[in-house]
Length: 315
Image (cartoon, rainbow, N blue to C red; front, side, top):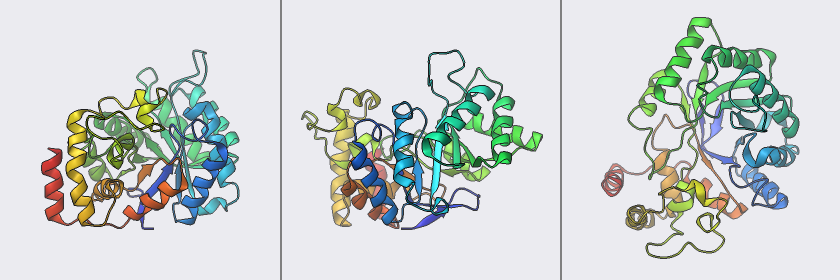
């Protein structure tokens, strides 16, 4: 396993990270979820990413159980807050009240005194930015959070936060967690260069485009049984990823992967990691065997001529 700095921060994280969105605490039974974490840890993965809203707290509980057997200083643990966790008017957003209460609830479920990375899961236009940033700074001062990040904020929102932190002498954001894959390159024009300039590390989620970049979905065919696209509770997040155009692109990528002795998933992950600003890619896994496959993408360097071929396919 290779490790990269999280932006300009001193902490190093594995190029491949394990996340728990739509899997642990939900569709994957606890025994299997723990086995996935054990396999990941054994293979050198040290970043484990979750969120309070994943399965309404159950994912954090499972992650906490899985990691309890390991020394706390041997892994990097990340969680998030923003989305509703109840029906009350203060059960959502980035207000001091909600974020304060949710961090402590997360720590309890995870069975730990601190998290290494705390993400603002979305931008909150209803809460003054200064209120949120001062709260995050308090968490760092109290030793309950070590590093700060955001997820799915615009470039302008991140820059405004950074300038506010500088003006108020608050602890600085060090990372961004956007969606990024061969089939979703939204962050390339603005967010990626901004993160490079400001020294933020990017840890993309869904680098396999919800499984579409594994090659399991075929043009003109129904999704195989047991896959995310066949599950009504999960496929709502897939949007137009399964379009005929995207599936045609995936088919054209297969020969490039084969030429390098890679699976399509490994090619897709290595492609994301081609950018130095990408600190780690967050994978999901419903079986330990999937982790065995995905970690092999770490350290793969794709030659320029194949990067050009991929660019033409994705254009």
